[in-house]
Length: 261
Image 1 (cartoon, one colour):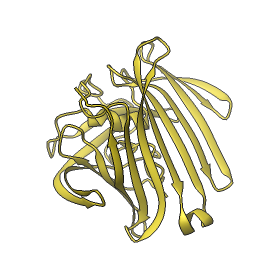
Image 2: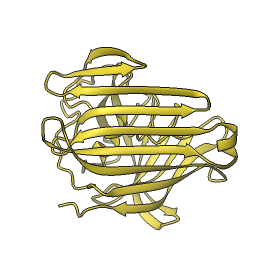
Image 3: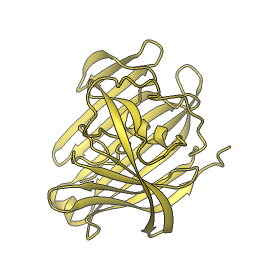
Image 4: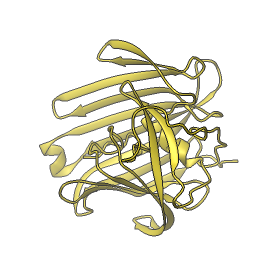
C-alpha cells in the first residue's frame, strides 16, 4: 500500500547509495523554485498494477511562516486505503514538511501513520545552522548531526522538482535524514516518456530510485517517478515494484496554485 510521504518520498536510495554523506559538493545545492507555489494540490488514484483500486492520495502546498519569521512552505501529503483494500487493511497516513521558501531545505517533518490497529507518530526539527536534527518518536527525544541543507523524505521530492538538469546518466544526489540516519540518495534519470493519465497525455522525464527507507511506498523495492517535462516537474505517475505486480499512483486532479515567477 502506498503512503505518499515523499517521493519517493522523493527520493529514496539507489542500490549503490548508502548511509552517510556522499563526497559530492553538489549535494543539496541552493536552487531557485520555479516549479510550485502555495495553492498547488495534486490528487492521485492508487491501484495494484492499475487493475485493482487500492486507495487515494494527495499532496498540497501551503503558505506559512517559519519560527524565525522567514517565508516558508508547508507540504502536506495524505493517503488512505479505499474499497476492499480499506476493509482488509485500513490505512490513513498524514505527512507534513515545512520548507524554507528561499533556501528550499527542510525545517520540520511530521509523520502520523495509522495502519490497521497500529499507529506511529514521529517528528523532526532541523537546525540548518547547527546542522542537527531533533527527533521525537513516541515521546522519546534524540538529537543527531546532519549534513548541510538536509532534506526530509517529503521535502526531497519538492527540492528535486526545483532542479533543472535531468540528463540521462547524470545522477542526482540528495542528502536526506530519516529515523535517525543520514542517507545520500541517488536518483537516476532514465529518459523521456509520454504518459497517459485521466487528465490527458503528458511529456515526462522518468526517474528511478531504490529506497532503503520508507518513502512514498511502504515497499522498499524499485520506485519509478514520471515528472512533467517542463518547469513545474509535476509528478504525474509513481510506481513501486513488488513481489507480485506493482503499486501505481496516477494523477487524477491538480490545481497548480499561484503563478510561479
